[in-house]
Each structure stands twice: as structure tokens, then as C-alpha cells.
Amino acid sequence: MIKTYKSIRGTYDFSPAETYLFNQIAEKARHIFALYGYDEIILPFLEEEGVFIRSVGETTDIVEKQIFRIAKRSETDSDIVLRPEGTAQVVRYYLEHALYKQSDFNKFSYIGAMFRGERPQKGRLRQFHHIGAEAMGSDSIFLDAEMISLSLKLLDEIGITERKLNINTLGCQADKEKFMSLLKKDLSARRNELCPDCQRRLLKNPLRILDCKQEHCKKIAVSFCLSETSGKTYLCKDCDSKFQELLKLFKSSNIDYVYNPCLVRGLDYYTNTVFEITSSSLGSQDAIGAGGRYNNLIKNLGGPDIPACGFALGVERVMLALNKSQAQIAPDVFIAVTGENLRDESFKMLQVLRAANVHCDMDYCAKSLKGQLRYAEKKGINFVLIVAEEEYSQGFVILKNMEASSQEKIKIGDLTEVVRGVVADGEGIA
Ligand code: HAM
Image (cartoon, rainbow, N blue to C red):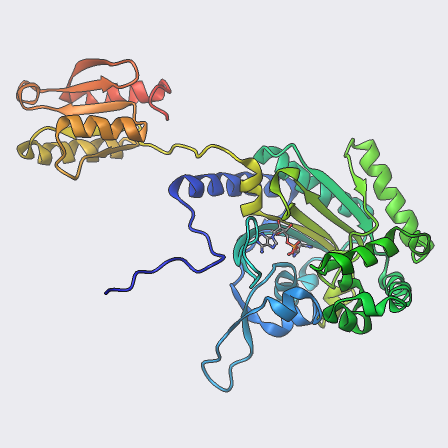
């Protein structure tokens, strides 16, 4: 028996209609990124593992459990992985090309596939796509506000109006460490109640307990975040006032938000502002986008002390939240051939119409006329050009309007002009 193949678990085949929707989303994103001054870059899928270990963090789920490693082809190869996210990679690019020397402020956008070996479920894939933006060189709270309003603007343009913006601040590195030590102190008393992974996290990186998939561990950590102890006592004056300023900016710009003191994000590089946008239509994997500040990442990856901030939307989740009936992509005109002796001439007509920018196609399967009309109807093609023996011998073809169930004879010499006319009327666009 010949083995048949299926797609890899956690990967997704986009149908033509889904690809069309994906491209429409990407096109909108590109338009808005240009409007906000973000320059698009295309970076490789492959990166050295260290880029993510030193940024996302050694004890995060992404690095500990989800990295796809590529087998070394020679002993001298570095440890290569499929990129799990874009931020650390953009910072690697920024540092490798010393872009901070060319300009003290840089804005980048990217659209591309990311890879994480997670347990697949609805909205959680092993290969998915990010639409993201990163800005390096400013610590202004107005940049945080721009990032958040940019991600909301993208969702608006795409058509997702039902969503919730969750926001929190981790404070600067010193604040974050204070927060972790308070969390560690509080949770140490309940160490035995934590799962083995979290007992380890408690020692190495207590913040990650908030990402634990075990409900009980999460509950313990959340109750700490909500408790008096954490009542933002870890925040220094400067970070607190910056956060208040950001919330004020939201109010004056009519941006609705929910302050969520338990939001820490599952990547280690964040400092200060962190945010997540959720959609209730998505079920358990409800985050459609997220981001925040990472003021120490550039320095930690060997660069100068430059503050930065960014976000990424998950395209597949955005598409799920859109829940759009699949877009029809159909040609405007279909050429129905009624005999093999007319195929040559029909093919020429097809070329002429395409050269005139008419979106058209023809039958390649020697179907009967009835079969060809049925095919055009199923595809949602409104105009069928019937090339029939008798009319053709008199210098005519028949143009059939499927929706109106009407037809007219048109002179072959007038073909392009007439067809372009009806299509331009919009009647032919599916
Ligand atoms: P993240 O939260 O890991 O952040 O990913 C951003 C978004 O990607 C999520 O909100 C979600 O919509 C989508 N996503 C994540 N994992 C999956 C998955 N397994 N399947 C489908 N969709 C997924 C980052 O990656 C940061 N780099 C965001 C950022 C940019 N922060 C600053 N700049």
C-alpha cells in the first residue's frame, strides 16, 4: 500500500479563500504601519538558539519546552532553531548592523511565520504568523501609547471591534526583581502545594509561575498579585508615575482598558508596560495580540543601553476572531468552449482579455456547455462568454449574465471593450 501524507500536527493549510483573507489583513497592516512610520523588514526563520535563551529567558516555556531545534549539519554549525518570536530577532538584526549608529530612533514592522512546539489546540499552533512592530531608542510613555493605539487601530481596520485591552506595569528591572522576591517569599510558604515545575521556577524565576498551565499553581500566584502585599509596593515612584501618565493618555484618547495586576507575560525580557488584547469569541486561547516595553533587552544581547517597546498580533487568532464567511475569489469572466475546434480561438480570446487586465479563465476539462455553466455558477462567476460554432462563424460570441439570466451577442472585434465595460460596472465582481 502506498503511504499517504497529512500535514504536520499544529500546522495549518490556508485554503485559497483563507489565503485571500490573510493577504487582505497583511495589506491593511502594511498600510497602517506606513502611516505610523514603521519600516518593514523580512528576517530569516532560522536563528541561533542563544538569541532566544538570552532574551525570552531560559526558564520560560517557550525556551524550555517549545523550541524547534534544527539538526546540526556539521560539528562547526551553531545551535540553530526555528524562531519562536520576532522581538529578540529584530534586536539581533538591529545590533548586528549597528543601526543605532545610523539613527538614534528606529521603527520596524514584520509579518511572518513563528514556530513553537506547543500542544496544538484551537488557536494554538506550532507554526503561526505574527504581524508585529518594534521601536528602539525612546523611553517616552507616548511611544507605549502609540504601540498600544497602533495595535488597536490594526484590529479596528481588520474589523475586530469586540476585544479587551489588559494592561499592567512590571516596573524597571529593580522593581521587577523586588516583585519577584516578594512573590518568592509569599509562595515559599506554600511551596509544597506547587507542581514540580513551579517548585523549580520558585527558585529560578518565580514570575513564570503565573504562566503555569496547572490551575492550582496559577491560582496561588494570582492571589498573591491581587493581595495587599503586591498593591504595587514594588513600583518605584518614577515607574508608577509613568504608568499613571499612560492610563491618563488612554482616558484622554478614549481607549478602554482593564488594569490587570496579574499580567506579567510569558517572556522574560519585559520591563514596565505590558499589555495583552483578548477576544471573548476565542475560547481558552483568547489573546489575539500582546506586547510591551523591553528596556534591558538590547543591553542584555550585547548592545548599548537603549530602551525599546513593541507588540505582535497572532494572525490565525485574528482570523478566528473575525469569523468571516470565506471570501469568494472568482474571476469576472469565464470562457465556455463548445467544441474542440474552437479551443484555439477561445484561448486567444482569453489572452486578449487578460492582456486588457480582465480577470478571466476558461474551461480546460472539455466539459459540456451545461457542465461549464454549472462550474461558473458554483464559482460565483457572473459573466460567461460562450464561444459557439454558429455565432463564431458569423463573427460573434455570446455574453451571458448568470445572475440576470440574460444574454447578448457581441461582435468579436468589440469583445475587449464590451467585457471591460460590464466588468467595470462592478456587476462582475464576486
Ligand atoms: P506572544 O504573546 O508570545 O508575544 O505572541 C503574540 C501573539 O501571537 C499572541 O497574543 C497570540 O495571538 C499569538 N500566538 C502566540 N503563540 C501562538 C500559537 N502557538 N499559536 C497561534 N498563535 C499564537 C510575542 O511573541 C512578543 N514577541 C510580542 C512582542 C513584540 N512584544 C514586544 N514586541
